Length: 398
Image (cartoon, rainbow, N blue to C red; front, side, top):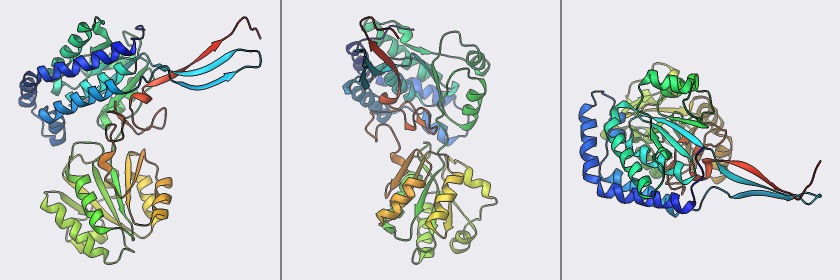
């Protein structure tokens, strides 16, 4: 295990990395264009995640500077107790040790995950997808420069340039100690890691997020929230895939038709359940299995429900455990919905697109966990730690 770096050292590396990203901005974009031209797939969402443009570099730099400004998450006292025999006992946060993150397509994760891990005192192993290898290797080169400039060993941030077979071999028999693995990607990647890993895994699972339009909804808000959730960025896990409309809503058919029209104007493929399909003149879903699907595409399903409880039951049955939103002016209905929906983030009158470490004030995230242990939702600095007990005595025996 690497000796814990002082907080001053950790912050200095983050700030130096931010400067290097600015200095190497043009080169990084050029390298990324090579990755983009090498990408031969037809996955629009993956291609969007692969792109590194000025906005993404600005966000990488912002994330690093925000992380540098945050308090040290290591060594924070969570509990203390003085034993009757005089021993002083305290529980403090501690670094995990070494964290492995396996992810697809997104070079910005190479910056953000590296930064969060380093700030929280952890060594990080980064295993990116083959489609982003040139961009990732360039970013790793900058990490190593930032570490070297601060007289810190380069192995604090390590890139595993492995193919699938090599990755499987490493998961089953790691060549170094790994304390935690976070797979960040599609369901196939997550299943692969869970099958082969020999240490704890936090699942950053599918989105498949729902918006429920209650009978007492502000319909202007509902329309804007649905459009934003579906169309602002299709390639992210906090995007919207399903809409449920309460048939107790006055003139619900008129509202449903308006939603369909507005989405179609934005090139979204809209499917409906039997009721919505009839009134909206759109294709009907072929099977209820589609309610399970995360689309990562310009595609959405709109259905109806007859009660708040039916909406809650349907969301809990089909969602990915990520995010769900209720649109209603009735705060008590909203509260009951939010308390009974089994997702990491629950909203009233807001877009699911906000489920994000930066938006939640965490200064970025390693991933968004749909597990309940040990952290749920965005995994920020505060969550990338374990804990340790410190006991101070002067000769006590039991």
